[in-house]
Image (cartoon, rainbow, N blue to C red):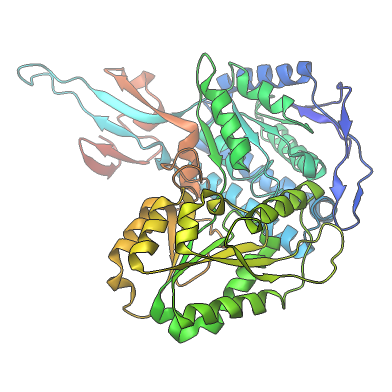
Length: 526
């Protein structure tokens, strides 16, 4: 641990500003000092990334796969040191740290497999028809190419899977884009260790210097400078609506606007239909008490909103949920700033008119430990008060008692965009509520049936995104191999000689990838 920035392959600590990470369990700062990147270090990292792009963009799928697999190997080689630093900076348990490391490794290897196979470039060929009348048809060939240097902002709640070598970084590197990570200040030590693994992997596999850099920052200045620089071509962000929106606005105000792929806030509405409530209100309460408090509620898919139609069964569920959540011991949040925001937003919600507190953990807790809270409101109150629609990041959930199906549908339709929606239904019950299902589909990126939203499987079919403000572009997922599409753009060649075309588009198909040729998906030569 040095506390320095990785500027390409070199460590640098030229800045005058330093900061420390915080151990929320010990309620004290960790000893290591971290140097915030200076203007000169920022400029050098961007210059190196831009230069590296000229070479890295042409690396073969096999070369990029070797790099990605080497990153995974080097992260594993960090062994217990990485786990210990992770835990000291987050308060999260060792099991969570190892699970997140495993997910990070899986993501890297998944992208390595993707670029080795090669069909992700979506090669499309429409061959020439010179004797077509009234006009001849040109030979047009299309494929995806990388955007250029990318800035990735580390996430506070996932120091591995959504940060230095997380999904955004892995996808961008797979797509052929150099990456500059703006390390999250809450886990700068974890970030430095992972960055060291990436740099070692780059050197071992012969990647150009500048393909990766890692910059420390305790405030917004470094991030602003990165996003504003003309050599940066895209941004990845996981965090708050306020932070993501600020980056989106900043990027759009550039002389050359660039895309910002931000995954932001979500209350993840859960709709419990009447028959399901009648049959299993008590078991659902137990299940959702666990989901609401999982990871101290510090998941972007935490179920912060539960919707049902007024009934004795819904009342029973609300009381059971309040009882069950108080049986769970409070746990630590990531940082004093995180619990400070939780308490502020929770108190704001509790201060609204006609909000009833069902459960609020009453005992004393240690510093930085969060008291879980369950509230309830009537549907009319919820509709009339947009403040109640906002996310409270932490172990908090609100149950909305809707007067009827029509009010339930209206509430869903007026929600902001969400990452997930969940439908809890009895056998054959869901078919009776097509408008509810359609309303949910229009507001979310993933619809869950008889489950909980917490937990995001890393697989090709996963969509982790949704209408704004869940994400800034609902056409893309931040999880899974298809997330590579954020960092590339379609590009066409017209009437180019075969020997000058990239291998993906050549007549002989030397990579043996699947291609769409004159409307037919084929694998082989033309």
